[in-house]
Image (tube, rainbow, N blue to C red; front, side, top):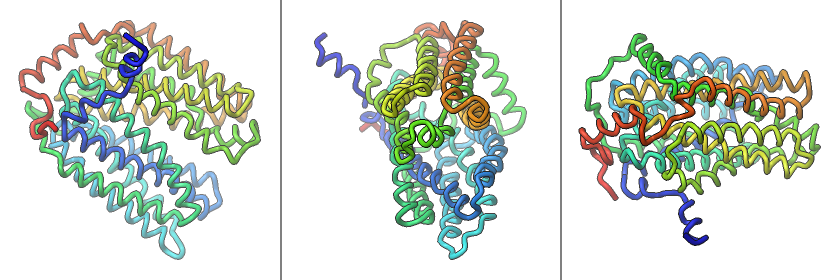
Amino acid sequence: MGVLDRLKALRLDLTPARRSRDFRLLVIAGTVFYLGQAISYVAVPYLIYTLTGSNTMVGLIGVVELVPLLAAGLWGGALADHVDRQRMLVGTGLAQVFFTALLALNAFAPQPRIWVLFVIAPFLVSAGALQRPSREALLPRTVTHDELPAANALNSFGWQAGNLLGPTIGGILLTTAGASWCFTVDVVGIAIATVLYLRMGSYPHREQTTAPSLSGIAEGIRYAVSRRDLLGTYLVDIAVMFLAMPIVLFPALAETIFRQPHLLGLLYTSETLGALVASGLSGWHKRIHSYGKVVVVAAATYGAFIALAGQAPAFWLCCLALAAAGAADMTSAVFRMTLWNQSIPETLRGRLAGIEMLSYSVGPLGAQIRAGYTADTFGVREAISVGGVASIVGVVLAAAALREFWGYDARTDTHLLAERARRAAHGEALGPDAPPG
């Protein structure tokens, strides 16, 4: 195989997008949705700070969102295993349009009310948390079982593109038009995504479902804990996010360490750029079967590059290390998603998607507290680097304790083979109402 052929083998596999109309709609809608959400993500703390002048008040918005996020995420997973997931996407999308529109109206007012932000935020985050498990659980139904690695890479590429462009657009809108237009653009984005969801086919459940209940949620948790390979993916993700995630320290890193505060935006975008490159060169994923080993090595690599970023002597070296960390993190994430989507039974997919959402939501919230405390105690560089090294230790310990996770092989895993057989028995290929092309 020549060099050109090897490069072609690395490029993003577009097969799922070419073959499945519903998958295309799902990915495009998700990309537009993430773009709008990233714009609002910039606007909310900015508006709170300009209204109050208090960093504490900015932090409190995350506190009021935490419980709704946890509760709605788990309940949304239970709903996704019982109701039509496509209808869930449409209904929760309309709810997010409504609540975001209220934020826009408040921001357009001559004197925006701070209490409106704190009242609306829990409802808005609840609608999003209710929606996400249905979206994650629906994706495997829109493509073939063997196309899931490529589908996850494409989905991640769209998500990262939205997260890359959103903060940039949000920053421009804030300085030129104000927070009100950030929310307005988000409303338009959510509305477009909801229309795209509406155009998808219906996806009724083919097997007996479990009505939403606390016992049903508990059943999903028991299943997740009983499978040590799944448990390993959750623990690795939480360890990396909680111990190594440095985002909250970027302002201090730019201003007090490198003394270039005007370049702060590059620190935020470096990881995302690395993730985009990794997604674009994900063609090799389909040739890999040892998912557990890839997740562990990629997660440990993320920690190593974060540690290097903390000690980088120059700003550009720090950005380069962060980009490499982003590429490693994206590789780990795609293989985790593929393991989940290929091996979790359809009857539990929604509830497990809710648990997954919590696993990658709680870690970053805890990381803010951990990073802030260690930076104030030991210094910014030390907090970043020690966090990176600590995450490597956490990942290695998880892999050593959960041998089934480390040894996971897609060719022999009994759960994956059972799910593939179930899908074949139901004739699932591109989804029940999703014609190819």
